[in-house]
Length: 539
Image (cartoon, rainbow, N blue to C red):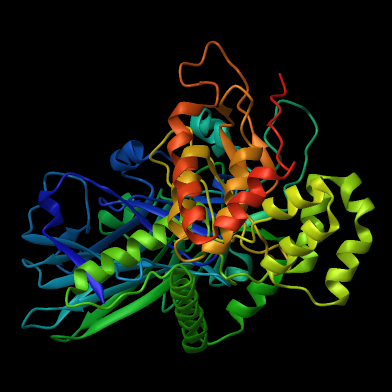
């Protein structure tokens, strides 16, 4: 099921996100521009931009040109005003939030074009293109389809924004063995020294379908539009990367044809080598089935994440049900989700103690060992055992230990100061506990998720109190590893000092009210115990 907005050509551009159960992130302008990547903006597949710049972008993301036998050229989702065709554009978003379809129907030519974007934890970002003959007669055309402005791994975001021409000089795009996969890398770490330093990771793009030729840059777009054949590129350097394929297509009435492109970031040399063998040594049908299966698995995992916070409801109003699902999804994306309820991994708790207080971790090594030996995985039992132990620091940190996953800070580039790092699993594929957020935002989100998991009310209150100063200030950000104060800069107008306590006190009051209603004995225990600390400001 999708929610569809028709006649998008009459609307001003708007901003949207596509969710993912993994560490993939993807944002769009309704004009088709995209920014996307893995984990953070340092692993961008397309440049990380704020939404206002994305609305102005005309050379980032999808680009498709169709050239008919009579020389006419149609570019779906063109930003120009000299379009001679009768067109209708629509954007559809899957009701699970993890796919978006851009569609343009050319009523003059009798062709419908669509491009669907999804994510796959295993393979990356998946782009599926489809063309369909909606006319009464057979049609034949040549199509150039792909994406522009692919980012190699290792370009600092500050340089990409301010010295983009310089960074282009370091870029290299290669298609090993003239196959279906291309790599995008930089020839050296960018810097003003004479020492070349290798960057051992790359962005990749690969193709599932038929192709007559490949292009790894945008320089041949005008060649194709002018009616000439494009040359098959196997390498290019010193310019922005792209990934295009060309093919001749003949379609009978109501016939359609589709193909896929897959993109991923920060792959090691070993990962690229393994993927290269897989892509070039596997049939197109098998590749497509593998990718589609992983996309479906990601959708099911996303639904499980939303279900963990009671995001599913079924009423007589399906639109209201979808809205509730989306509200829960985006709340989980900000604050995280207790995916395993009140269960936790003792090994991850041990890692947490070693990060937060190495001395305590050493003193309580026997305590942690007993957790693992007795297979204690219930978070409420952990709190009980810590209180029995009596060590105030142990009680404080077991309370602060929140087995949250799926969290990211703001999670969208609508704010120019937004930075995020999405950590769901480590590089070996093992689950991690991780959250990060601006103080105000994350406690708003946590307030909502405690309705589904009220046993975490007391721990969230503990996190709140331990991150407050005696004079009522709160740090700018909090995360799984502690708190984060911004660095004072008197010349930066947006560089305020934390958050004011009176601005936040309503959150604490609400949490205390809910805890008193849920477990009044817990509130009394918190109030009388010598457990909490004040946050230290490091300057």
